Amino acid sequence: MAVTNFIPQVWEARLIEKFHARSVAKAITVPPTKIEGNKIIYNVVSDIAVKDYSGTVTFDELTTPKREINMDQKKYWAFKVGDVDKVQAAGELIDPHVREAGAVLQETADKFVLGLYASAHADNKLGTQESPIEVDKTNIYDTIVDINKKLDKKRVPRSGRFITINADILGMLEKDDRFTRNYTVLENGILDGAKINGSQLVLSEDVDTTSDVIKVIANHNTAIGYGEQLQETEALRLESDFADGVRGLAVYGGQVLRPEGVAVGFLKIKTTP
Image (cartoon, rainbow, N blue to C red; front, side):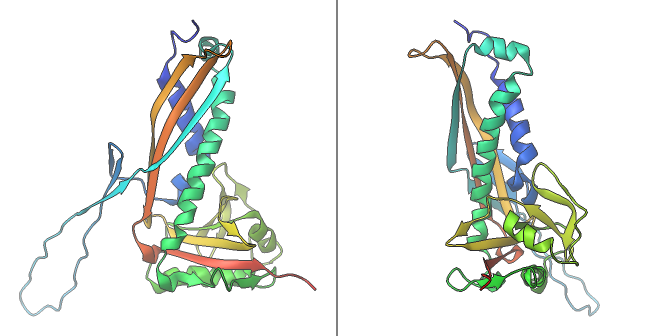
């Protein structure tokens, strides 16, 4: 039997490394205070009141109420290898096997997190699914500024903001002289060196696009909570094949913690007659 020396921690560590390196969700969200079982725990700081001074000072009670988010999204990965012990012993041969598993998990989680734009504050939406804003190279830059301005109106801090776009939007931006083209695309989609209105641009093809309507999502990194963990990683001998099977279960969840910190633009590429 070829799975007697299987070490799940080795595979999990490599998978998590690959997942986090490419994850947009991890880059644009706030990590949880802690994880308890299948729940992500956040401690939310209470508001502080500013009062008129008239000779006496009263002290407010500060509380840190817990926000709990269920990790209710469950995804698994499974593949066959000829001899899992040999692959594990070779070390570097693990990477090709976990790279694809990590990539698929990352894309699935990114789609989930970027789909949370629906919980943005009602005032923080530019256009609608039924009536999107038409954009081309002449107005895309200004349109993204307008989306970002929605966060300004809600007094969201400038530091820690992200704007997630897809390749179609990036292509139009590159034709605008105001856009800084000297950037580097990092593995997790961050366009290092590219900001608009002080907000960091992120490139992702996991942004929701339905009926030719593209969503551009702006958010502060404290506005969305997200967490994930691997629950099971195991190897087994396959009865129907002369091979070993490696499989794992990942759970994750997320939620908009501050709706005023998320804005979305519903855009449609203008057609040229």
